[in-house]
Length: 175
Image (cartoon, rainbow, N blue to C red; front, side, top):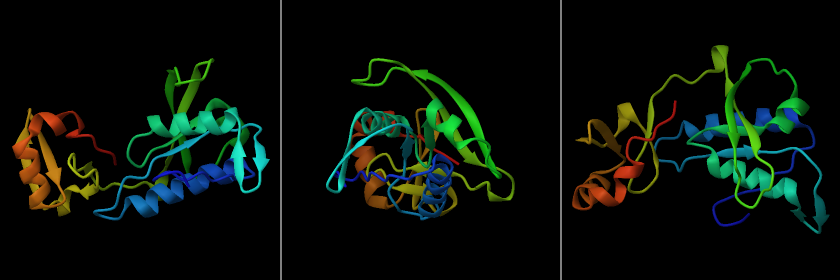
């Protein structure tokens, strides 16, 4: 654990992808729950006691920083190691420069397909960063040409007091 982040080591890449999708689905369905973002990279790492170190860990952390709400992002190395998985599709997200990493990383988004696909509409409260199911939002405000959803009236009031502080985060949503 590091702050609100958690590092998990999973021996098989295909199991890691499945776990990432399960975590984002099960935790992502909780109205008023913080967003879950997953980043993965496959490679070697050094173990010291209960901790893991190395460039693989650093790359996975940088990929997680790029993930949006309920996204499972993975590098090409993880995609190759995972292979084809039933009920999982992969979207090419392009190449990214990662902070403190010399080579650019090609990223992919894993998503559940078929009967496992989540169809609800979600948003992120720009004030408290909690996930809000659009249909269950406490309040919605029209701002900058789009609707912004809030978990509570107090978050909506805070947004109205200082919209410029929160506007760049308003409207970021996932499915």
